Image 1 (cartoon, rainbow, N blue to C red):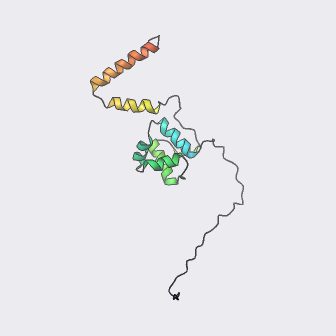
Image 2: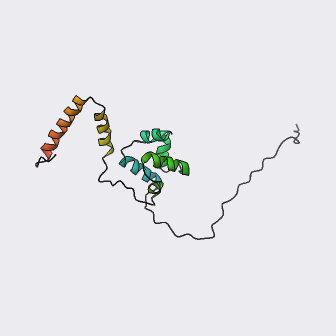
Image 3: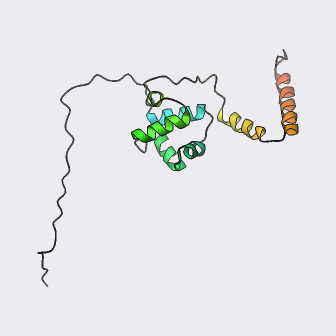
Length: 146
């Protein structure tokens, strides 16, 4: 059996190899934290879940998870979108500038979630929960300063 190869196109793939840079650049003094780790840390400081961040950007939660685990390399537009959603600069995400929010001032993610649920309750139930919290805190604080 013979095939007529006159109509068959040969595929030629040309891949360009990256050039080795001639100029040696000085190292950047960045932290040991990766971009994904910084995104996760900033997201948690802001009290957001991966789902909430993904909804703000308009992407799937798994994409955020892959960025945070450094499975995906973040490109410029997505970096800008994440920075806007987290209300930080891209320099803060890249590690070129320290994040403005300190860890001491930031509430834990669990606490923020609970506070958001309390805000959705009717005012009477909110008042009851706040009174209960005040009594519990006074029992742990001997000065009673609330």
